[in-house]
Structure formats: C-alpha cells, structure tokens
Image (cartoon, rainbow, N blue to C red):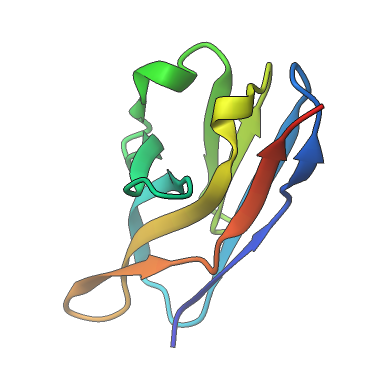
Length: 119
C-alpha cells in the first residue's frame, strides 16, 4: 500500500514564504511524475508545479518565478518552496505522484494541506 503524507502549510501574510513537503511510503519501485496541485473554494483543482523523473519542471504561469518544485529520489519526497505569496494563492494544496509498485503505475494523492495568505 502506497501512502503520501504532506507537511507544511498554514497561515502567512502576503509577501511571505512557506514550504510544503510530501513523502511517499510503501511498496515503491519507481516514481514518475511528482506534482503539486491546488484547489481554491469554488474552483477546480489546478496544476501548480510538476517535475518529471527526467528532472524537467513545469509551472503554472501564475506561480512562475515565485514557486520552486524539487524532488529527492532517495527520500521519495517532493517539496514546493513558495515565495512572495499572494492572497490568490490561498487554497488546499495536494501532492500527486505517479508510482510504479509492480507491473503497472498508479496515481496517488496526498491528504491536502491548507495554505492561507492573509494579513
């Protein structure tokens, strides 16, 4: 059984920083994509940042230059450093990984962590 556990998040003032982390555990042969999504109230879940096993990263236009995604293969973790936070970044953030545990790969999600940007 594979599990993703997120940490970080909380309340921060505009312009502040937060770091989110997500660790995978269980039967894991390899991890393909590691991503961060977010969902604000009344809105659809959207991709924030993604990193492939090749190391290629991709960011939503709204966070480019402010957020940095990084992955640690040995620790099976993905982190999201968020700087210059804005009120519109307020959302529940979810980590996602595509993990191969056997012959096939499957998608797994973290439990979500609240990020609130407010003065």
